[in-house]
Length: 108
Image 1: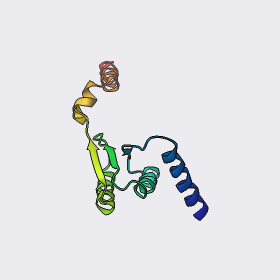
Image 2: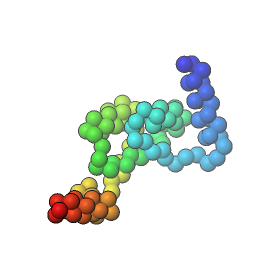
Image 3: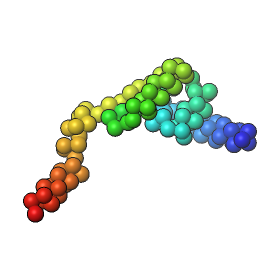
Image 4: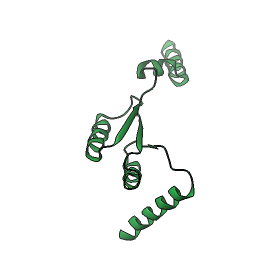
C-alpha cells in the first residue's frame, strides 16, 4: 500500500511539474476523485474544486460532498445547469423519443 501511495504522489508531482499549474480540479466525490482531490490539496490547498450538480445525484452523494468540503475546508464551487432537471428531461431527445414510443405502444 505504501508503494501505491508513493507512486500516486510521484505521478501527481510529475503532472504538476510538466505544465502550467491547474487552476481548478473537478470532482464527482466518488472514490477516485476524492483521492485525486486529497493529493492535490497537499500541494495546492486553495485550489477550487468544481462539482457539477446535475440534479440527478443521490442525497448521500450531496451529503458526502458537503461533509468532505467542510472537513477539508475546500474552496468548493457547485455548478448547476440553467434548466431544471424536469425541463431538461422534457427537452431531451431521449425523453421525447421515449414518450412517443410509449404513446405508440399504448395506442395499439
